[in-house]
Every structure is written in C-alpha cells, then in structure tokens.
Amino acid sequence: MIPGFWQQASGELAQADPVMASLVQRYTDSSLVSRGDPFATLARSIVGQQISVKAADSVWARLGAAVPVLTPAAVLAHRTETLRACGLSARKVEYLVDLARHFSVGEIHIERWATMSDAEIIAELTAVRGIGVWTAEMFLIFNQLRPDVFPLDDIGLQKAVALHYGQGERPTRQRLIEIGENWRPWRSVATWYLWRSLDPVPVEY
Image 1: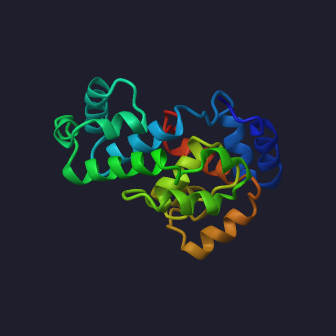
Image 2: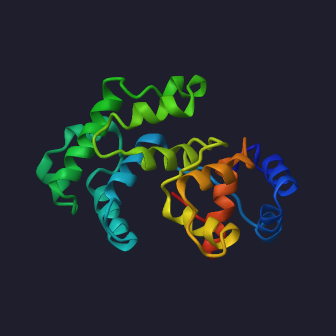
C-alpha cells in the first residue's frame, strides 16, 4: 500500500528544499510501501537483529516453516526448543514470546493506534523486550506509514545528510534536528528519499 499523502508530501518537500527537489525528481519510480501485518513485521525485526540480511532471511524462512501462520497464539503454542531449532538465539526466543504475549493479552492496542501519537505508540512498543526506539520508529514509517517520523539515530539518515548537506561531515544531533525542521510535517518521506539516495534498491522494512 502506497501512502495517500505521498504525492503531496513529495511536492511540498521539493518546493521547500532544493536537495529534496533533486531527489524527488530522481526517484519518481518508487515510494514508501507498507507490507505485512503489525505482529509479523515486529517479529521479523526481532529475528533480524544483529545478523546479516542473508542470515535473517534464512531464519525467517525456517520460522515460517515451523509456524506457517505467524500469530501471537501460534508462537505461544510452540515450545521453546521448536523456536530455537529455527536458528533463533535463546534471547530472541524470549523477545518473540514477549512480543506474542503483549499482543495476546491486549497490551498492544492496534485498534487505538489511529488516535495515538507517534510517541505513544513508540512507548507501547518499547515496553516489549527486544524492541528499542529505532525499531519502533522503523515500524511507524514502514508499517504504519506515519508521515513525520524522524529517526535521529539511524546511521543511513546520518550518512545521507552528511553527503547532501554537510560536505561529507556527519551532522551533530542538533544539526540534524535543525535540518529536519525544514521537512515537517513530512520527515518520514524526506528520510525515505535520503535513504533511497544511498541505495539502488528502495528501502524496505
């Protein structure tokens, strides 16, 4: 699903910022796209922590074979040994089970998210073991298609800002905040274009 705001956001960013204007013109062939349901998206983020993309894909495939319909109830119904056999570390199994528990007992309020702020959803998600602020921010951008998330600690964002705005020098956190102010209320979109400028393949999560 492509965000309904994408065309408006891209146009307003292009008008406000010459660098964005160039990136918007360059990458007219792709956009941010939401994939997957919330539980599966968050589960995959846990699986992929601190391992290569190739390794994560392999573990995810094995998990999909062991738990064909990945739901909170299905995860909680499987033994720890079964989940470990998919290639998950003991800690990641703990994280995945904690995520499933949060969903199953109603501590993750998907039905309320439409009325909750980004900060409120981040607070809810980071209460789950293994989900930090960066993971929650990526989830808001790529799954929930929130338009104004600005992941200050993201290395790719920092590299792209250094390339396009800092003559190669990595920006301080304060400088990054200042640059980002020019992109409100579309900082997720600006971030996506900056990521896109570093990679020939559109960024997905």
